[in-house]
Image 1: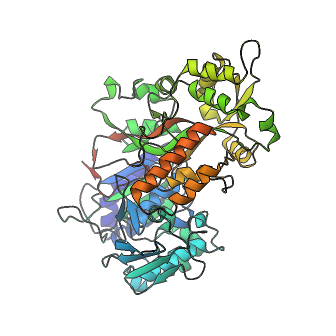
Image 2: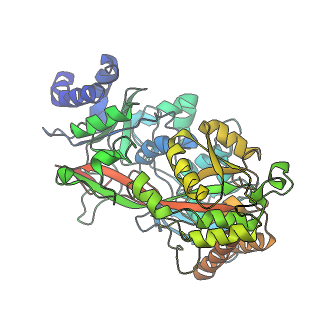
Image 3: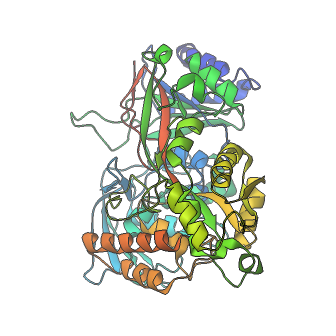
Length: 562
């Protein structure tokens, strides 16, 4: 049997070797284990298997959902596991493991009815090695595990100060699970869609312990088969996956997923051009001019050779300004004046910056801090800052600065990748009489300085943890430490609106509160939004059904390959 499988799947091995051309080759043992075990997860014996291939240059550190803290880990975890609910392309909450749910009249109890057709992947942890049916106690165990201090999950914060301390998660029977909140929490359903909340089986977690990081067993569309760390990760189709398409065909369509770990973006790009990868996420600055026009379209020579996908991404790029007037560095800085902060906001030509430095990848942020891609976004409701050099000069003069009384130098901290953007903004502002010097520091140092109130003026970005506007307003709530409140913004009116939004059940009324909060931010200007980001993907023409989303989650259930 193994010889037959070896012949049938040798082409996969060859593909994996090709993907690892710039790294060391896969060791034979890994591939042999993969080939010998492939029959336990898939009984397909087609001549032409459909394997989706992508590269993860950042590397994957864990496949344990409790450690799905970054995109590199979240993507494979999302393929292997399921959550109670998920986010669809319209940024709406949809059922996944749950069939339906209800919220109590006081908003503090959420009840989920589970699907009856969900099974864990086969594994020796289960009786006879056969994956058993998912039940409500699995959800309870997974959530309690996330809060377990011995696990030390970086995702524990999602439940802290939100769920009851005693019996927050209760399995009423095998089909119904309840979650008890301290107080109503409108964004909680969105929080449950995070990969931290993926459901696993107790016997699997106990069998593998810390090794669960490299032995994940879930209920998702793909099941784990082999991982040669730093080389390749292999996932195979879950033939027992519960979801079907509109015609009743069981998902997913693909036979597997192969992930390589080329660290070099040049190697990744070359592999994609040679059709050894099916897509690349975003594009390195070194290659953007080769592929894209200034206006963000595929250049003529690439049209027909690949697909370009662009979609709003829940990420706001911004300039942050320390707002804590107790800090000595702020007391001695012109940035303590609101008019100076506003002058800076009016003095940056965001359209030109994106056109020449980012090939129009992104949308100029001329509304608030909440980005495009969320349903609440409405540029007519929140007035931000458009490029207006005359207004900038006027505000500068009103603040007491002109040619005879020049403004002192302000230092902008950023990371090396954004040095060119920093220089562009500094040059723009210098022409208006606002003297800015750019200092580049490593990301870890910048985050440390931001956390300790040592960064007076800095470039930052805020990517949504979950699809709710509260996640962006969290950054400025006065009672929050840094992170997330890196600017140390304090405003009583803002805080009152924020607290009301967390208790408002009506969506329209809640959106109005967010518009008011965002308007306060734009008036006080502790932050200057630069652009609302975009998901940018370059996709091989053989791939279809591959849709981007504002969370930039990797969705492969409906992907097909020719």
